[in-house]
Picture 1: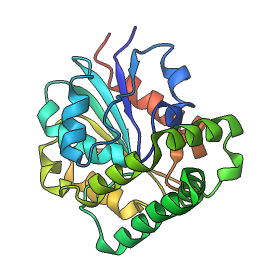
Picture 2: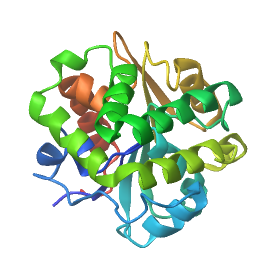
Picture 3: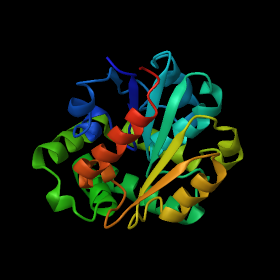
Length: 237
């Protein structure tokens, strides 16, 4: 088997959000999707929880909220990271202009249910939602609904209070790939550019006609980029 890969998803997400990646990459790599952190209320707590679940050496692929956690951990994992892949994320702290939108989503969950709130999140995160396989969307929705309002509120608390990750970017020594869609309004491309410019020797991939969810909006394109990256950075001969 080749080098292990850890996939860390975003808000209200678990292994199902990587459902179009895991079967492919598991053919050649041990794959891990950390668990047990979904009701924690800070990025620091989440990071501490998942740290023990990591292999000794691994590629770290982190998406959105997962990227916030990965950026917190990366400087501490200098000797363990083979590479880091940051997908649709940002190193900046919370923009207060976004907080009311997040809290409106939580209120929707409380008043109309998790299914409605999660559907709203997905509609705001994908511009080609209708092209995502139905079984993938159903699995992602089922997982979010099962997490429930308590986890939703906890994760929003963590996102809103997240630390400023920009101060640590220069300390990331692992080869780093930053991936973002050119139509991402959740973590816009300028956030990706900022990380790319600050992380030494990083690479940036801008995906055309794509929003916040490259792994499900354009899985073939995303998987090809990720496969080429991991093969190029492999620690196993």
